Length: 171
Image 1 (cartoon, rainbow, N blue to C red):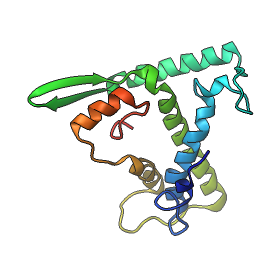
Image 2: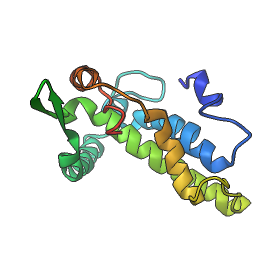
Image 3: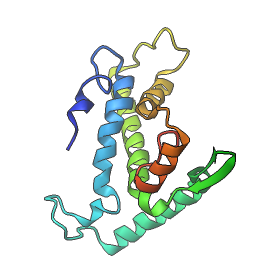
Image 4: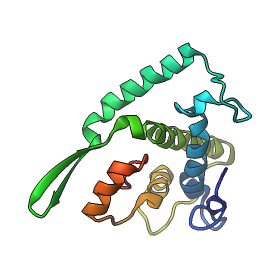
């Protein structure tokens, strides 16, 4: 299910170059599609019935890829937060966030490749005059924009404990 917000501002508007829409709406939609290929998604068939349509070898291959990815990210999933003069070192529980991390990375990759195909077919689009960025750089800015938020340290600790998503600045 795609929320209606994906098809409206600020995620999508016809008044901007497509690299912005692919980065924002495209990434968000691809993220949701990739949930069909995460650890939970691979347990269900195309009708949403729990019957593990993927083979054990396919799930083992997914586990191997995820383990490799986690090794690359290990140091990035630790956040040091200072509160009342004490530093708290918080480590993200990868078992809880694995599906969201897979969807984030897979969605970003799929949206980027889709825009590259679009550009190959339709040619390059004009750059935004106020920014000294390429279309690809602006794509990534658009993909990151929904996660820009000011979250105080106490809220960050809470979110790191209860949410399966990485906190916004880690995403």
